[in-house]
Amino acid sequence: MRSLGIRPVPYPLTPPHYLPNMATMDQLITAATRAVVVNFPGNPTGQVAPPDVVQALVDWAERHDLWIVSDEVYDQIVFDGQPLSPAHIDPERTLGVYSFSKTYAMTGWRLGYLAGPPSAIASLTKVAMGIWSSVSEPLQYAGLAALEGPQAIVEDRRRQYQRRRDAAVEYLDRVQITHSNPDGAFYLLVHIAESGLSSRDFALRLLDQAGVAVAPGSAFGEMAEGFVRISLASPETDILRGLARLAAFLGHA
Image 1 (tube, one colour):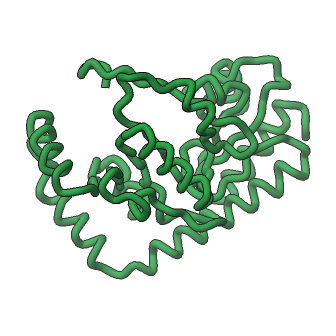
Image 2 (tube, helix red, strand yellow):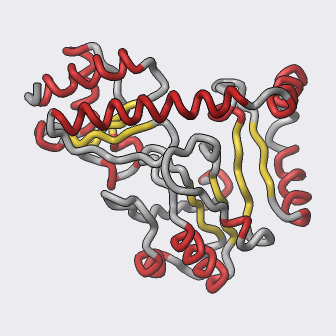
C-alpha cells in the first residue's frame, strides 16, 4: 500500500469484543480517506461481527462515501454467531476478499479471489495485471476442483477447529489465564502481560525455554500488545501440551 502512496490508518479493536466503534473511527477519517478495511472472522481475535455492527459499519461507509474492503477469508470457519458480509447490505460499495488457503487448507498456494461490483472489478483486473501475470494454471485447476468437489471436508474441519477451540478455552479457564473467546477462524489470544515481558520477548523466551512457538501480539498492532496468538491448526494434544508449557512459564501450572 505504501508503495502506491497510500497511508493506512489503524483503528483500535479493544477486548473483550474486538468490534469497530463508529465514533472512534469518525475521529480518524480525513478528506483523503477512500476505504475502510474490515476482517470478520478476524485474525488474530476470531471475532465475528454481529449483524447490527455490520449494518452500522455499512451506514457509516455510506455516510462518508467509502469503499468497504471486507476480508472474509475465514468465512467458512465459524463456531458461534452468523457472519454477515457487508456485500449483502451494499453490494455496490463492497469488495469481498476470499482465499482457498483457509477453507480448503491450500496454505502457501496463494490462491484467492475478489468479489465486487462489475465496474470495480474491471478496474482492479487492469491493476492486477500490472502486478502479476497469473497464478499457475495447475493451482487454478486445483481451486476449481475444490469448489466443485465434495464439501463435507469443509464442515468436518470446522468441527475439528471448534473442538480444539473449546478444549483450549476450557484449559485456560481452569488455570485462570485470561484469553479471547474466538467466534471463528483458528486463533486464540492469550494474555501474558503479567509476565512483565513484551509480547515479542515473551514469544522468544517461550520458544527458547519451553519449545513452544506463538506469535507476539505486537505483530498485529499496539492494541494486541500484552497478548500472544496461538494457532488451533495443530492437533488437540499438541495445543494442550503447548498451553500447559505456556501456563507453567507464567506460573499458572
